Amino acid sequence: MGLADFWFFVIAVLWTGFFVLEGFDFGVAMLQGVVGRTDAERRVAINTVGPVWDGNEVWLVVAGAGMFAAFPGWYATMFSAFYPALVLLLVALIVRGLSFEYRGKRTSARWRRTWDRLRTVSSVLAPLLIGVALGGLVHGVPIGADHEYAGNFADLLTPYGLYVGFTLVVLCALHGAVFLTLKTDGEVRRRSELLARRIAPAGALAVLAFVIWTLVALDNRIIAVVLEAATVLASGAAIWAVRAGRAGRAFALTAVTLAGLVLTIFIDLYPHVMVSSTNGAYDLTVDNTSSAPYALKVMTVVLAVFLPMVLLYQGWSYHVFRSRITVDDLEEQGAQSTPVETPTGD
Image (cartoon, rainbow, N blue to C red; front, side):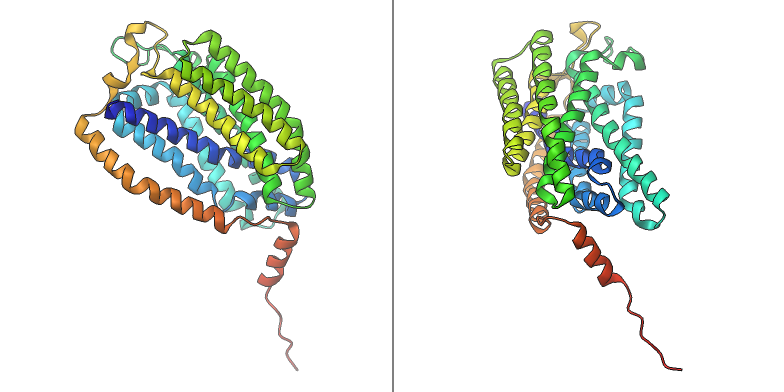
């Protein structure tokens, strides 16, 4: 295996890590209005991901940067082809970030509801758009002999890509519901458990349909078939774990399911990086889009130095903020931050 092949799998791992970590952030935002009936309960849901959501998004930034540095030909064709979808994705991520920062700037109920709704919509839109792009990579989009995109916006919306996006949305919702059962208590936790029980069967069916479609439509390697089978088993086991009240195991299983789905796409894609639906001779591959060997060597050294640091930092962050969050905690914080009036004599 050469450095170009190594970096293809690094990028696959980065995308997988993004969905495993950011997936439950998306899911919590999707479900905040369902598990939270009051403003305080919605704040509880939001606060479960408040300390970690921006760190989780770093994986997306690094994945994009890795594609740019390791495979400039892939990056150029993909980002020009999916330009409208990527602009929408960027807007969704910006709005989502603003919703975390600006929701508490005013006490107006209308103000807070508006940001909550924007957060929910953007958190559905982001995994949907990314799924459309990932599905399009492996299923094929129009690419010409010059390795330039030769289609229009409608050509990006392939049925397979749209279904991959739909499946990712469902799995993120399930991942978020299970995460909420781990991080909350009281009514928010009870509603999250109920939602997880309802979403889990839908998630398993969506994964099963994804695997069947992938097996029929693509040339699957043995390792991909094994991974697809493991993904289906993990999604089915998640149903049992959710119904048994094993939130920790359910969270691990939903993480495995998301990881299996994303890795399946990249394994089936290799050694291509984009498949041309126009002509197989126009496919973009690891070899014809990669950077020079020296650049890949420098990137490998940087990866070896900084990736362990990032993993340690994120692991420590999750350890520090591991406690459950309740409405009572928010009320106590509010009481502590309220200034005490000192009586004055006349």
